[in-house]
Image (cartoon, rainbow over all chains, first blue to last red):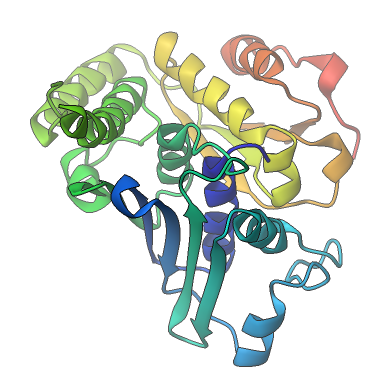
Length: 184
Length: 122
């Protein structure tokens, strides 16, 4: 995977598999402290401590179709290569938190990539999950909560062409705006 | 500075969508499922998904439910897309690049013609 937004999609999939009802995704680009941070917070099944400790091992997975899982180990390695870290905390019945940090300016840091597509995709393909997206660029924050959106479009699927277009623009303009107001 | 799209815009979009839907009677539900395990994502499933969403948006295709699934154990065939139309049997496609995804939407979902060269026999 060549973009961090693809990794983000991948770890959010774990939250979906854990039957989380609320998933919060946060992306922070803070140039002032040279940090790029991704985090996913869910209220899914959670894991016992021994499983949480082992999940960064490529030979641990909850999947039954195959006995290896690579998502988290790959991301952990990518973060550590960039003077960063991956921390996972989890509690059974409460949920799981993953925080991944990268040195923003590190030469090996993958680009963030198309974050809007990742977010739009998760939102549209998993309508039963309550999604909250937080994006922060230095001190400017953009927060997107899908609850008012879903209430507003009542009775229409999120994959309706006009709705899709509007959602994409909401996400994109929110992120662009947070980024743009810093340049001046 | 661009203006942030607001719920007001969404309301307008909704009204527009409802008007269009009234004109076009839906012909049974269409479900498009994209495989989104680590294998799928690594093989380019997000681009496939993007192509599906873009096609729905640009060609104004109504009545499609887009969902996703995890790894189904056919990692070497990813990206995998499944199409279920009404009561008809599920069709599973493999190696679905963004172009193939567009073709599936326009030919299979649009005209009921299965895109045979990408069908997986499982």
